[in-house]
Amino acid sequence: MDGGRNLIEQLRRICGDEHVVTEHHALRTYESDGLLQYAAVPRVAVLPGTGDEVAAVVRACHDAGVPWVARGSGSGLSGGALPIEDGVLVVLSRLRRILEVDLANQRVVCEPGVTNVAISAAVGPSHFYPPDPSSQIVCSIGGNVAENSGGAHCFKYGFTTNYVCGLEVVLPDGSVMTLGGKELDLPGYDLCGVFVGSEGTLGVATKIIVRVVPTPESVRTLVAFFDSPGHAGHAVSAIVSAGMVPGAIEMMDNLSIGASEQMARAGWPLDAGAALLVELDGPESECVARFDEVRALCEGAGAHEVRVARDEAERQIFWKMRKAAFPAMGRVSPHYYVQDSVIPRTALADVLDRIADLSREYGLQVGNVFHAGDGNLHPLVCYDGNTEGEAERAEELAGQIVVACVEAGGSITGEHGVGVDKKRYMPKMFTEADLDAFQKLRCAFDPDGLANPGKVMPTPRLCGEVPGPYREHPLEKAGLAERF
Ligand SMILES: Cc1cc2nc3c(=O)[nH]c(=O)nc-3n(C[C@H](O)[C@H](O)[C@H](O)COP(=O)(O)OP(=O)(O)OC[C@H]3O[C@@H](n4cnc5c(N)ncnc54)[C@H](O)[C@@H]3O)c2cc1C
Image (cartoon, rainbow, N blue to C red; front, side, top):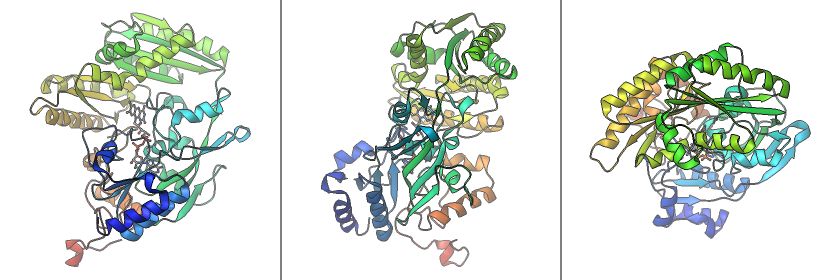
């Protein structure tokens, strides 16, 4: 980092000494996000306390030509918040104020470090914020915006992008811009829509306006057990084809049930091939009427047991089983690799068979826990990193799963983003022309390539992807290419 000492002094003046971290051992706190396979220690981490301080930090990085990465809670699963070794990490966890709750207009204005669950807590019990990642007790709303995060209830309610109405954003040159607002459908380009899902490559969100919705009158939850995920998949198709839109339809396979049972102790049968968690919500009369239909459709698809949550406490245990699935996998395997891909619902059985084949071929267990309604798979590839070559085999197997999903008409990522982990697969989904269009958009926000370089796009591009101060590309020098 050229001129690093000056920049660090400046960051100390902006945020205070105690909010600038430079010691190597302390910086290691931030070396990875939730995807531990990637690690890098930044030169400095800075924890601004206000939006103005974020703007001043980003401006200082811009003036020094130093790349930076925004970090919320660091729970991302694609290496999006992976630091740049010679760069600055802008940690947003001190910006955790809810600034306004406007229930009459169903809006909440908050800072980016507010946790997802804190928004529902602030508007409950009359209202709630629907996109609910399983990490909701720790992940920040800023991270949710950057990843366009989803969750169990997105099948019915939609993703983060459907709930973000406005943003205050610090652009990579340190200027501050407002995108969207409290009102819907503002004139002009939908730049708020562009920013959601941009993975920290277009700027830092410092204020976020979200829409909240009334809490449904009634909720009914059941879990049905099947011999195999294929049978449970038929139940999903039957429920959706019957015109029902459950609040959530989540599936867990045998390995995931066994792992979660060790944490949540719900007493689910350990020999079940698959568990399907179905939740209906809405007016009481509708929930009651349709709940029996769901039960019958599950039984028709081969469910050998159906359990209905008798009260809120039991419903919470059902959900604990589902939400514990990722961390619980640590109880059955020393290491695991989280995949995130989407397939058309109708391809569920075929793709799950293909994953089982790959698991046998590579000799590695794969747990499956997923948002079945959205066709959003989360295969958990288990391995022992202490065994020579197993980590590499796991990564290769995970890659084969991504390819199988794309070949089935799906996508390389459902909700965890591209980050550093999936960027190599971008050409499997997009043409050169598509990628160039993405890059032009990125350059319009960040011509110097300082905001989260090295993420999302598959290869370094002339306008921005080279970390550090701008250097002339050899093709430019030869007059064969130009910056745009
Ligand atoms: C156990 C577990 C379960 C999970 N379940 C789900 C799930 O069900 N659904 C789901 O979608 N995800 C899930 N995730 C993934 C993760 O929690 C989400 O991607 C979440 O949105 C990340 O938020 P964060 O605050 O931790 O962001 P970080 O990991 O800190 O950052 C993620 C990205 O956002 C950028 N960023 C962060 N803050 C800002 C900001 N203010 N402005 C601009 N860019 C910013 C970063 O640069 C990075 O690119 C899960 C993760 C774990 C560990």
